[in-house]
Image (cartoon, rainbow, N blue to C red; front, side):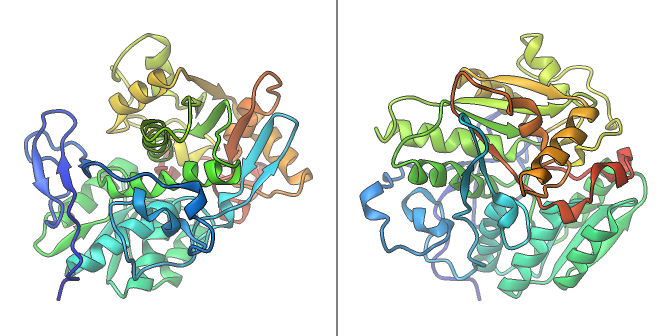
Length: 383
């Protein structure tokens, strides 16, 4: 039987304004098939002085979250913020329970699914999102199937299986994998735990910024650098900074610095051209070590571009050589981070004119050292 504390927010399509009850299993806009946003109504402010003694996880920011009184948690969140230079600090999200920042959104999806009591949960990923969904579904006691493309890292598929999820390997790359998962999502009784289409995931990732705000005593750095593929962490950051500003808890929004691999940088290209959306982006990703952000056609492209511009931010791209160098440099500082997770350090590590926070968002054990990683377009995970 579904949980009596059902969600009260409403799904809304940012493209055409269509709406749906978030207690349904509808995973995309029925009019345009695009991803949902979430109309939560007016959320109350999170008061810094009220946080002492609260639960030591992202659920401590309950006022800002669309779900409360959770039953699903692995103690996610509250990751350390550590200085790397005089201007750049790193937030160690690779210390999450499944070793990546995706736990922030996955716990929200699993909690929502638990309340809706579906017959099954499906997800598509070839990396951290699939692992996180598998782990949190295990915690929630939900049957889970994760669709992955052929060529997915054996380290990641082993982690998915270890959590008890059924693994479905799909030939033909990432787009074919997404199509297979979405076909399964259309079956009755199925909850599609999509980190791209379901906006509850974004309300989980926004806690990344709430934690920085709390750690810095109610302030934020001049800029927040974020690796961007599907943009789930960036859009969560944009939500958080807008909420904090609207409640008068900060006096300015930090610039959002979006980082992409030079090899797969459709958003950076559109941003530099002054475009509001993608045009002419390739269907397949080129090979890159930054597999987690190798997304040629992100569904929320228009929102990502708008969020960066509204913050006064910009896009930066990094080469494969810079990714290799950045991973070795962080390892020499004591942090073994996966190849996608070093992209922001590669982009802004030498900044001296303002304060910046970068996420180290996946453990190095997930991919290994860059020089030992087999680079393939079909092995991309959708961050």
